Image (tube, rainbow, N blue to C red):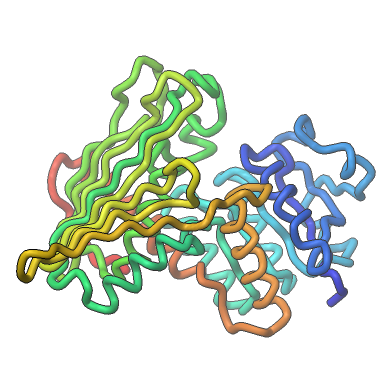
Length: 353
């Protein structure tokens, strides 16, 4: 193991590829990008000039044979990523895999088995687990401040299919496996399990095309999820905004308080509007504004925290990252259950989380 850690990137032209590379510039003393496996047919159209002369390999096998790396960031498509992770794990190389990692439960099981068998340090790109407001909500629930948990309402709407174009690989079922739920809703579905600490025991969903673009995967939908504790979670979202833009928020309701989380509130790093009981004449009202996140790179300070967690795991300072192969598998299991419920047009019983 070197200092700084030597990191390979697989998948240069991933939609978040440049963002991941920018994140590494925030941790120069801990890690540096040293090797590339372009992927995506060898494309390097968004590669920054500072990395143009890095050694390149045309396959995972060539990367492994060359040696000299301490970890690999896998930003390949769902179709390409599974086999790459299996080979890296078998070679004992730590892996950070861009979300959602896989497009099906079958492939999720392959990754889980490979990581578990090899016992490599493993991290995924679900960086909202490192958000300040997210963890405050998690602590509120664990501390019982909501009282009896009643409902979690999640909304996530973003730019429509036309922004990328219907021919983009994200909308190809053979490459990606699914559409909006697989690529974007996965963030909030992963967070639901993390923030509540609850299992999902039933799903009623509709995933379909609601916009004007003709694609073979869903552009959004709705999911109603029953939690083990009896609370109800709902998600509504899709590729539905006719410009580069996004709207996202949560509302969590309990018997003793309700909280609205606005991740994108202006001049903050996210905000919590907290409404509590009124035992006499004075009601509990509070607003928490997280510090502005002005760090460069994908996810900013959240992404830096995610990277440092992975580096700590590689260096043996922690036993596992906040994201694990099991949590990844739970998320893809929930996504696939949403697809199954939509396909069958009925509630599907499950035990996820």
